[in-house]
Image (cartoon, rainbow, N blue to C red; front, side, top):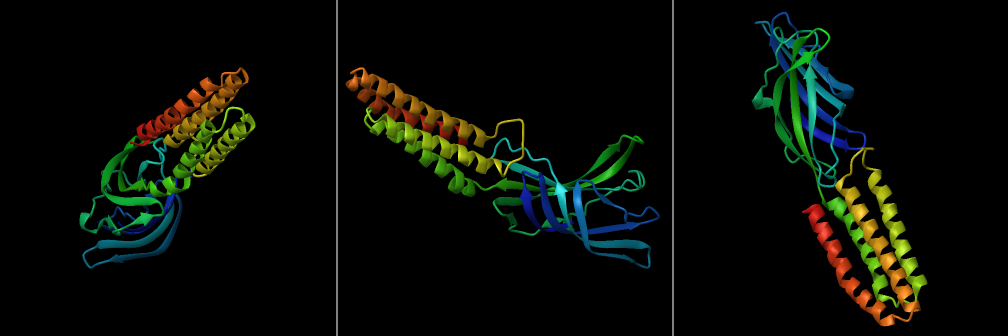
Length: 272
């Protein structure tokens, strides 16, 4: 197999699209023509040619374009990494009659392959035995694998930097006099709503899962910082109304250091 390109890697749909050449050689009565792509959602054969030489060696050449289903764990998003597989099996013949062998010299992927924000790396293919429960027989299984690693650059530019700016904006309340509570609350509420809007941007590209991703933890930490900044604004305003203006100023000054430092430590722990 030679993989010419992989495109449309979609973690939300748990699928990817691939185009590749497949060559099968065999000799004897057990034909390898009825192979099956086990994890294919849809397949298009761009061409298929079967030849036979004078010695009975058959040679099948196929060019395939298809969409393949692949489980992808996004818990480490946006630093996730996935192994994409194209799996071929043949349920017409059990393993004792048909067993795949890899032609390592002809099995690879086009160099410098990338798919959008993904960096791709070809992994050595493997042949395994797969037990079919209905007849309790083993069948030969060929798996071509590609490692896909997400590039951090798009996430940093589109998501991380805007979130950091919004969270820092909420911390400007510490520089606003405690008596101007309306301005402080408006600033904090605007920051909170903006972070919530960014959450929907992230969710659009991810599947519905029952676990937290690193991006979810980032959002939760950002919500908490913005909420605590709002609480601090209300608290210092209460102190101001009770005639404790000096105390409220000291708290504001301390928060100007504590909040940015805490958020920076949180980001470093999360991503490094």
